[in-house]
Length: 143
Ligand SMILES: Nc1nc2c(c(=O)[nH]1)N=C([C@H](O)[C@H](O)COP(=O)(O)OP(=O)(O)OP(=O)(O)O)CN2
Ligand SMILES: [Zn+2]
Image (cartoon, rainbow, N blue to C red; front, side, top):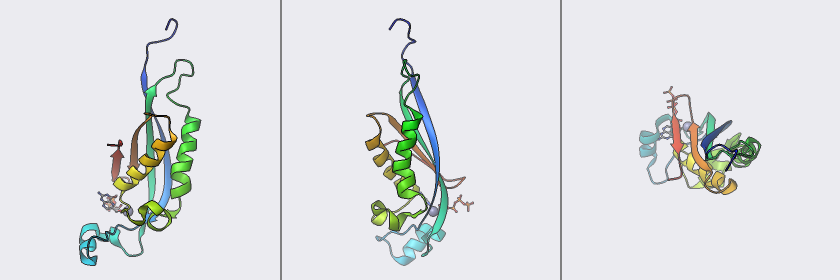
């Protein structure tokens, strides 16, 4: 289009922290096996994390607005999908999804992806990256 730059694809990330507790425990394993597999993370009374989630969207940089998407809209989706259901919660007991899904960071990334993808425009969500601790990081791209 005359006067506009060529089409460009951009990636936009918003980071959000939340705090939650959980316990890693599989009903498919014995108590002894659970202790062996999950170690201290199988503690019966659980343990907590200060999670950091990066939500990345991908798309055309709109030549009119200059945006891949409006960060205000992305912030609203993050509030709905991450903060309201997960912050200051016991993941296993307060979030129905984790009643029968183990609350590993991999599964948490899938949960966030599946809910975020429903709220965003089609084909916009690119990646969910979760820092469970400073050292443990999971990335999920909907595959
Ligand atoms: N594949 C996965 N393995 C483990 C997960 C997980 O979500 N996916 N989670 C845990 C525990 O919940 C816990 O988060 C592990 O924490 P910890 O080992 O304490 O974390 P650090 O490595 O950062 O701590 P250091 O003790 O400083 O090494 C276990 N496995
Ligand atoms: Zn943990």
